[in-house]
Image 1 (tube, rainbow, N blue to C red):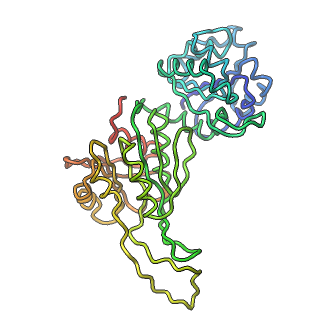
Image 2: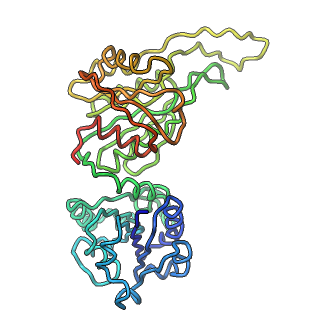
Image 3: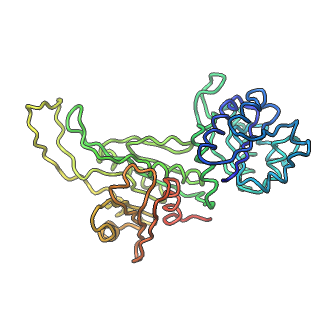
Length: 385
C-alpha cells in the first residue's frame, strides 16, 4: 500500500483532517499525520492516531530521534499538506526547516501536493502569490483554494477544498506527471434533456462521470478548463456552464470554441427532440411523439477546428470499432473514444481509443474512472510527462 505523509498546519480547516485521514485509509493508503504546533490547537494527536492507526508526528516527538525525517522520506510515496497556511507556504518557498512539517517538506523528494486554506485577503496578497508561484515552478502541485464562506463569515477565495477532492488529488499525484500548462480544454458532459411538456423530458442514462473526471484531472495537471453540460463539476478554476437541450449546448460550445485548444465531446447528445407542448400532457392526450433529428454538434464544431484537437465519443453495442472508425473520418475528428452501453454510469471502464490516420485501436480495460480519464488525456492531449 502506498504511504501518504499528511502535513497539517494551523488553520481552522485542520478540524477536517481526521476525515481526510479516514478517506485515505478507506481508499487503501497508509497515512502518517505530521502536525505543526499551531495545528494542535484545532486537532488532537489522539484523534489522528485513532483514525490513522499510526504514530502522529509532532514537534515534541519528531526530534526525539525515534523516527528521523530521512527515514520518512525513504518510506513515503507522496506528501500532502492540508490545510496549508500562508505562514507554512512561505516556509516551504524559502526553504526553512524550523519545525516538524517544514523539515519533512524540505527533505522529501517525492511528489508534493499543497492544499491552501486562509482568509481571502491573505490568499490574494501578492507576497503569498509569489510564494505559491515559486513552489509551482519547483514542481509542487496546488489544489485550491476555492471560493466560499470562510471561518469569520466572510465569503471569498481561501476555503480549503473538500476532503473527497483531496483524496482524488492524492490518487492523481501517484500517476505519472502530466504538464498541461497553457492548454485550454472545452469539455461537454452529461445527457441532454429535450422537454416534452412542462414536466417531462426526453433524455438518456448518461451520468457525466467520465467527462467530470476528465475536466478535474486536466485542471489538476495545469490546464484551463471550461465545462458545458447537464451535470455540475465543482473544482477550483473550472468554469462551468449549465445547459439542458441540444440547442443550448450547441450555442454554448460555439461561443467557447474560439477560446479552446482542445474539445472533448463527452456529452451524450440526444439524437432526437420533440415539439414541446405548452401544458402538462395527460394520458388522454395521446402517446404519439413526433421525433425530429437534432443537429450533429461535433461535426459542425469540427468543421471550424483549425489547429484544435477534437475528441469525440462513440457508444455502440454492435460493430463498435467499425462504427467508431466511420465516425472518426466522417465527423473530421482527431480521436474517438469507443465503448458500449454497459459502461454508462459504471465506476470502472473499458474502451478503445482510435486516432485519425491510424488503423490501431488502443484497448483500455477495466480501469477506474481516474485511470480512464488519465489514459484518455495521455493519448489525446499535447502533454509533457
